[in-house]
Image (tube, rainbow, N blue to C red; front, side, top):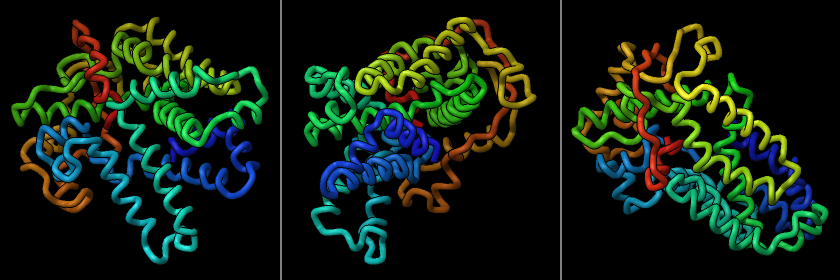
Length: 337
């Protein structure tokens, strides 16, 4: 819901939603509908781990989808199956309309795979911005786009919404980063107990996602270039860019742990260290102890062996040295969970 609301805000602020609705025929409205549906389903049945973890542990999704965007393809399989039912809310659509809707949803959801982050931005630059005049009025600007270019712009908008917590007021942003860190650490516990290499920022004995220098690297490598493209395509979204800039400045000013008084609970959370929360540890042990997953996602077997989508929080203890920054090749782990 959060990502869908953010996408709706971007579509409204940019004028793209109004452009689509006022376009002749049904195609524009269908495109807007498909974009919002893509946001709704993009994390459907998400396992709470990264694609690489799915592959390394031999989960069913890695076999079913040949190690390609496993979590995103699982979301698409489940969501599009619902759309095919005889009593589904698109049952009365023409077949061509259903196919158009399906095609756009697939593009949108696959674009949220962080392993495809840089290819998506490259497509935005090469296929849209190199042939784009943002100084024109909204209608003239978007009317010049082909259907393919419109879809690429929508992929960019959804990715900006997916990472939209990076532009929220600092307390809300910190709460999201805390949740991401907890999820990374639970995955790391499972990797450690399975004897697998630990993913970037997944070692709870070291500073994690809440460590300022790690966030600065994440913002500079992934977030800021994407939002620069967003505001080039849609200058009306400058306010979102200002939020990102403010949070980057915050992390630069706090290269280690953020001030405890800004954290989302009364617990004195820091950015790295060992958690003594027993429930969290027990959940991590279930991840590690379970055999490769062969049951369908969200079956009782999977629920018993995977972390929850909203992690419990635990008090953290800082350590002396920061973790290394992830490389671009490792960036698919960041926010992949």
